[in-house]
Image 1 (cartoon, rainbow, N blue to C red):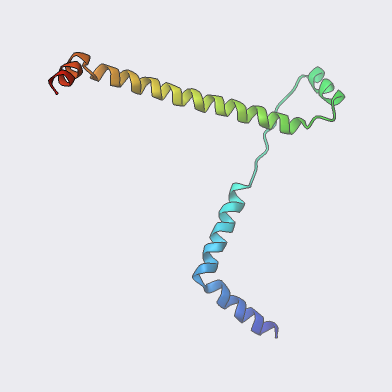
Image 2 (image 1 turned 180 degrees about the horizontal axis):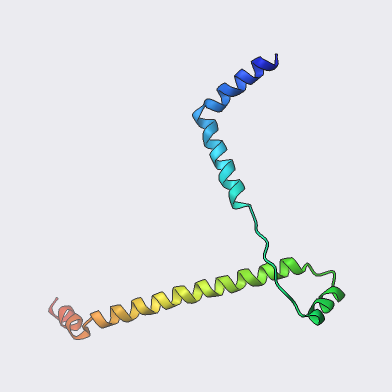
Amino acid sequence: MVGRRKCEFDKFLSTEKHLYYVRQISVHWCVQMSSTFSIRLPKKLREEMKKYSEVDWADEIRKCIKEKINKLKLEEILTKARTLREKMMKEVNHAELIREDREK
C-alpha cells in the first residue's frame, strides 16, 4: 500500500500545475526569510529600555528603520523628479510654444 501511494504521489508531483504551486510556495518562503541586525547601545539607554518592558523594542526599531527607508526612497524619487523637471524646462522654448498656439 505504501509503494502504491508513493507512486500516485510521484504522478501528482510530475504534473505541471503542481510544479507551479511548488514554485509559488518556494518564492513565498524565500520572501518571508529574515536576517539579524545587531547594534550596540549605551548602558544607560539599555537600562531605560528595560524600565519599559511592555514596549516591543524590536518592533519599534523595525518601524523606525522602515520609516527611514521610506523617507530615503521619497527623497530619491523627488531628486529624480527635480532633475527631470530641470531637464524638461531647459529644452522647452516658451516663445516658440506661444507662437505655435497663436498660429493655430
